[in-house]
Image 1 (cartoon, rainbow, N blue to C red):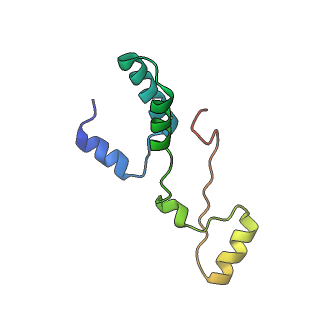
Image 2 (cartoon, one colour):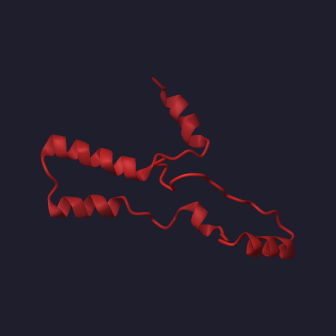
Length: 93
């Protein structure tokens, strides 16, 4: 069983808990403890799980074209960072 220190290191390395798993877990727990969610409870839960807009990654001017990013990086004399992945964007592979 991981300790709190282990989890702190895990979170500190940039790993995040998939939000869809968190939401599903909350719904399962809420349904088993208090019964089905009311419309108002669902709306409150849904709004609490929405992004706040304060996420740091949103401040980065991401490019979706590698060629445009390469040209921009060259013009600004900055390195090019490529984020590449294989599989489903929510980790459902």
